[in-house]
Figure (cartoon, helix red, strand yellow):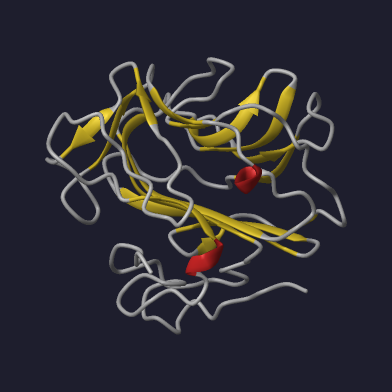
Length: 238
């Protein structure tokens, strides 16, 4: 059975903007990207407390952020990596992947993915060439399930989220659904052994240029099933 949260209930889109998160137990990754300027320490505030490693020049930037004291800064050739874990194998279940992005170069592509060659599972990207949310059930062949229908403006913070609710897969930008609902039916996403990456993918595709803030992955919960008001504060830690 799908678990659906009213995006307006907490005054900020499924758990942001005051109060606690009733589905916090289902949050498997929560990166506020706070800390000292140029720090390479990224802390997972979810109950899973995954180890996050900064690669290349990926670092915390305190000059530009959406919430808190900082955001993750990426220059197109660096990324954060998280080891493979069952938390990120969604199977045929519901999930929500979301974050805030500030793009400085339209060559951007990868936001967050579990997308290693021969181990393709899921990929969320945004750039002038389009992109959106890709899925794979085989580990080798992929489908652009939810394409971006318009490119968000550069040098502006925007919220992006993808949600699976049973057979329905939807992509939202700033709370508005992008394109049509994709019928994923009972498709099981490939259970690969690849790492999770933020800011680039493991295939060395074009990375992300700019800042990423408040990354949250919620497993077994479809937080957004219709247009909603984006979060007005950092996601809660409980």
